[in-house]
Image (cartoon, rainbow, N blue to C red; front, side):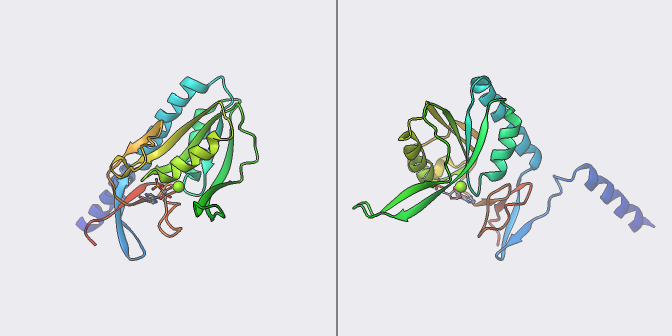
Length: 202
Ligand code: IMP
Ligand code: MG
């Protein structure tokens, strides 16, 4: 009787506080702990959207989502902004072996729209060393947009090697490995609604 009551009570409380009771998850034999909840994320998406709207509500900004990691954040942010004339497009930013003396170079795949004279809001999942963002911004600026802004859900300031700080940041976090809400480990875990951090106790 007591046990039955206790489990009923536990289920009741869990339903009231589903996020705070998030469980650990395991990928590739590694344990990840709950870190940022879906409510935390939604709140920051809303805040960033408010900032973008303040500047570009009457503009026709092009949201440029960097696949794959930013897909979920970009769609949520794009909708939350709700700017009538805005558009969204999805690109990949790939390394390739260049024939020039520099060896490797980067190429933007999937950008079919002209960005000349337009406001472009690049949407990234995370800026870690900043190498990817720096190279991408350089390639985009060569296409003569009016303005390029960078929105990143996550930013690891202590890992930054390039001085490229996003214009819009959801969370500044320590240099730990995280997954969920688009961020992956070997292609997995992007579908988690919350963000998890690699546990220090493995
Ligand atoms: P960069 O070091 O700023 O160039 O970031 C390169 C890429 O590394 C990001 O776009 C992510 O795809 C990936 N990355 C960096 N930190 C994490 C992390 O904590 N979890 C998952 N992917 C990450
Ligand atoms: Mg990425």
